[in-house]
Image (cartoon, rainbow, N blue to C red; front, side, top):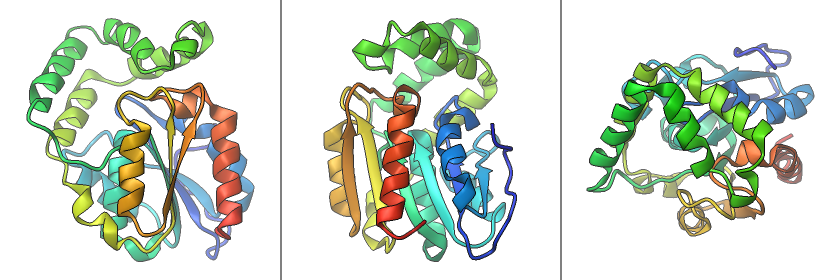
Length: 246
């Protein structure tokens, strides 16, 4: 696995910033980072564990890096990435958004997230065991190796971090208010079986961004970067090449 910090090689080359989802870490984008690394100035894994808002998470990632950026983000990380695009649009060369959303919190969301917080605070191991199959495509729920990888990652997340990330999502901004001003290309990818970030949700985000396209990946649910690692890496690499970013 690549180190979770930037190792600069050439200032003219972009840095890949990977931003993972809730309860997740560098394992989310490791295959993509490894595939792209020879063509990058470096890789930086954003720290989303310490801040109380998505805006602060975005600012931390921007402060920790220099120069042009390619941002690859999943789920909650996608919302952090959108905020990075608002705060520093001139630095973003391209953005890849996986299984994410742009809308603010809805009226029923606080109660739902409080239930999740309470369950994780009570027993994170049990929470990981119950949560993992729910966010995978039906055909992947019997993949014991995949389930083990996901559960190990979730169990490694301290319950207080899980709570802080959930509360940050409850006060998230309405990204639709500003994504129409983005002047960099955006690739949205989601799984055909993602019931959280559906293809329709991604199509709506793509429609709001001037230069964006949305792709739907078969045999994947909400944990697309884990369920289709090779396909995601190939798709993103090809897209960056076709757009002249790398």
